[in-house]
Structure formats: C-alpha cells, structure tokens
Image: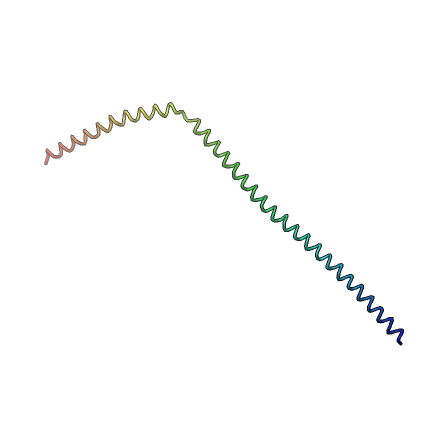
Length: 115
C-alpha cells in the first residue's frame, strides 16, 4: 500500500512538472503571439500613413496639372490684342459717355422749358 501511494505521489509530481512545463510553453507561445500582433499593428499603422501620403501625392499632382492647364490658357491669350481692345474701348467709351451726358442735359433743358 505504501509503495502504491508512493508511486501515485511520484506520478502526481511528474504530472505537475509536465503541466508546469506545458504552462510555461503556453506562456512563451502567448508572448510570441502578442509580439506578432504588435508587429502587425505597427504595419497596419504604417500602411495607414502610406495611404495618406499617397492621397496627398495624388492631390499635389492633380493641382500641378491644373496649374499647368491654367498657365497654358493664360499663355494662349493675345496680350497685344487685349491691350488694343482696351485702348479702343477707352477711346469710344469716353466719347459715348460725353454724348450721353450732353443728351441728358438737352433732355433736361427741354423738359424744364416745357414746364
């Protein structure tokens, strides 16, 4: 009976050691998994920053293209012709405005004489 109990006690001690070793191994595995998760989180965060950077680059390229198109449109205008048109307008506008003012004066006199 004593031998039997002694063997059972030894078996229990061995089982405890085996289970302790398994617990330690599982703890090590958990730590490794946590580290892997941490690395994955870092990669996800870095990819988010990369996506934002790519969006900014696309926006900058689009703006640069629009600036180029606007500059090409501005360059297509004939500045000499525009200056000539402006001088022509200023000459004609002044004369037309004087004529309008003299007509207003004439009409005002005519109306005041009628009264």
